Every structure is written in C-alpha cells, then in structure tokens.
Amino acid sequence: MSKTKPTIVFCHGIWADGSCFSKVIPPLQAEGYEVISVQYGLDSFEEDVATVKRTLNRVGSPVVLVGHSYGGATITAAGVDKRVVALVYIAAVAPDVGETVQSQLDKFPSDIFSRVEVADGRAWMLPNGVEFFAGDLPAAEQKLVWATHYAPVADLFQQQKLQEVAWKSKPSWYVLARNDHTVHPDLQRFLSKRMGATIVEVESSHVPMLSQPDVVVNTIRQAATATQTA
Image (cartoon, rainbow, N blue to C red):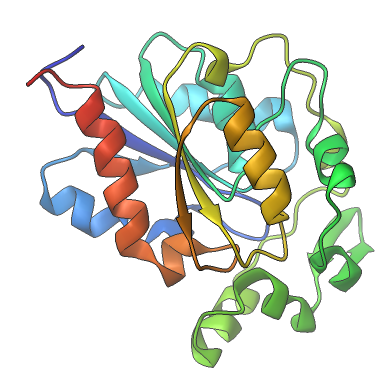
C-alpha cells in the first residue's frame, strides 16, 4: 500500500471520448488527485489498450484505472500493469480470458443496438438512440451527448482476446446502473459479482458519471483511499 495519493486514469467507452468524465474530474482534482482521461480512437482494441499503457507512462504511480462501458475492457487488459492498484468499473463490461465484449452483450441483449446504424465501417448511434444511452439527462445534455458522440469501428467488440485479466488480481469497485439500456443491468450484476467487486448501485442510465457524478466520485474516492495506508 502507498501513502501517496494515486493518480486517477479514466478510460471512455464507445460513442464518447475522454470529455465524458468532465463532471467527475474537477472534484477529484480539487482534492489533490492527479487526473488524466485517456483519448483513444476506437479503431482497434489492441491500439486502445496500447494508448492506455502509454498514458500510464505519463503519470505518477500508483494508479486507479476507471473504465466506463467499453472502457471496462481496456482497463481489464491494461490494468495488469504493476503500477495499477485498483480498478473502478462504471456500467462497464469486463471480459475474462477468451471472451469478447460482444459475447458478453449477446448473453444480455439491450435496447440501444436497435438504434445503431453501420456506415463507412463505423457503428453510429442514431439520434433516437440517445434516450437508451443517456435518458436521465436533461434534453439539452442528451442533444450534446449525441452531437459529440464518436462512432467505433464496427467490429470493435469482436476484437478482444485477453491472455490475462486485471480484475482477477486487483481490487475492484463497480458502479452498477440499474436503469441502463446499453449495458444490461443483469450483465453488470453478473460481471461485478464474478470479479468480487465492491458494488455501488445507482438509479441511472448508462452514463452515471454525467447523471450521478457524486456517486461516481465517491466510489473512486473509496478505491483511492483503499490503496493508501492510514
């Protein structure tokens, strides 16, 4: 355990970039945490994980890795790095060895994928899909989420083939969004129990870091505190 405040590194999901954590970064910075939000391209799982690892090289150690949605897969892969002391999953997937994100989603289908269009090799969220992604945000914020959403390469969820998973060796926390129509709450419940995470349930859509930022900040704070000695 370290007496040093850990660095908080955020990893975003699809239809988003690092700015999706804009409501939770400032409170953590105000408490003296070094914080950085990874910006990867959603072109390749391998490259996204490599970007996370490059980011770890740019920040202080120890690190709490925080992943939202697909970002749960990237922190599961990159989190085996010895500098990572804790994992926080936010309405996220968490593959085991040999699993893909798609194989997990297929077991617990959700509503939003009926509102997705594949074009030019990317998976775009249709305008009426935002209600299944961020339906508990005010209308103006939902419009902003859709206007800035970033489409992943269409086969991104089939690419994950992990040889080692971080949640088997690192303490984990999980923010479970009960009203999620993107990553089904039953899938979240299964994954969080499988990893033995400390579970925090919240009445939220798929984006609790935007709709319930205080809950997310408190959970990250718990994970960070647990890496420090008294």
